Image (tube, rainbow, N blue to C red; front, side, top):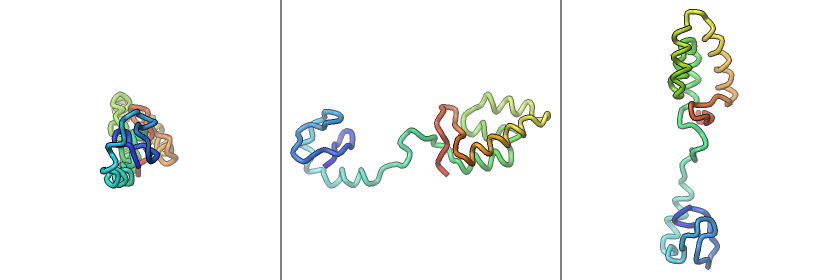
Amino acid sequence: MYCKTCGKEVKEGDIFCGYCGARVDDQKENNMSNDLNNIVRPINDGSASPRSRLITFLLCFFLGGFGAHEFYVGKTGAGILMLVFCWTGIPSIIAFIQWIMIICGSFKDAEGRPITMW
């Protein structure tokens, strides 16, 4: 059986959830729907970025020298700097390094969350 409030597994016979303290003895009739809700969970639990790694990869590959991938992940300041200095070629070198970081999975969005979803 699972707690309706927090979704954690609760032992049969428990009155309160050991994780959140919610009352669970009145949730027995909804046990089937709780099991189904725990099977169909979203993949992104908030620790990863909602941005697509494939789109970031393609933007960095084709428009990296202009900072398009930086705008996509929410780093507008870095994107503007890359756009302003695109004529120097330095943003292209930086974009190449970031392209490798995207491939390796270590590139992060503006909130510091890794972009892991392909």
